[in-house]
View 1 (cartoon, rainbow, N blue to C red):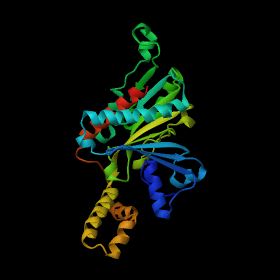
View 2 (view 1 turned 45 degrees about the horizontal axis):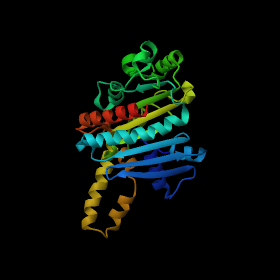
View 3 (view 1 turned 180 degrees about the vertical axis):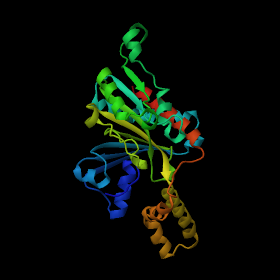
View 4 (view 1 turned 60 degrees about the vertical axis):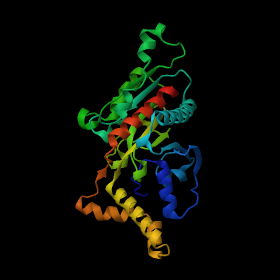
Length: 310
């Protein structure tokens, strides 16, 4: 299997197609929707084992929401992005559980490491209702869904695998579905904190940065797990590869007939760049200087989207 080094099914599909000169992949269906000039939705459905093996993702649905110009987004754009997320998320939830079934929202990550703080920040803004329904039902609408939320921390600070914590919670409060929020890795600098992936196949924390933890999914917990992930980091090899593409684009504008540059631009140079960087320990994980603002905007979009969908 390819070393995709990305958590996004859409990117994995594109890499596999490019490296194998394919127009389509057996077992993978794609649908695209354009909301406006800054907001686009792509849906990748993996329908069989062939598609699963091709891009290394389980059979299921992967929804990618791309948001352009998020650094400059005003309140109106943030709200519209949240509404788009809400609509897509609600459709996924409704496929798995009933209208008033209990939901547990889980924010993965480390609050004190900015690129990894998305999950905990979202949890702080979730409208939890389980305790109100249980102890003060007279103060809440009778049609409200029981929602609880937790940020379990990371193995390095708790000494406990996230899956082990969630197993105990699931056994005690018995939710019908988990929504798990986590930071992801991408193979494109353009996607950092401007792309949201929703999937109904669970999540393997740390997989995109080579720090794989135990899988959180229906297979391990016994209930459906919907994952919401946002890329916040890329490898330096990705950064160099993207910059090389931008450099070649600039040269091509002045040398449009240069066959060598055209050929170089058409191929994915990630593996060659990574091989050059790894021996000297220069293949770092990097994030943009505006990551604080991007995380704030994205955590607001995700929290609003979840609240509206529930």
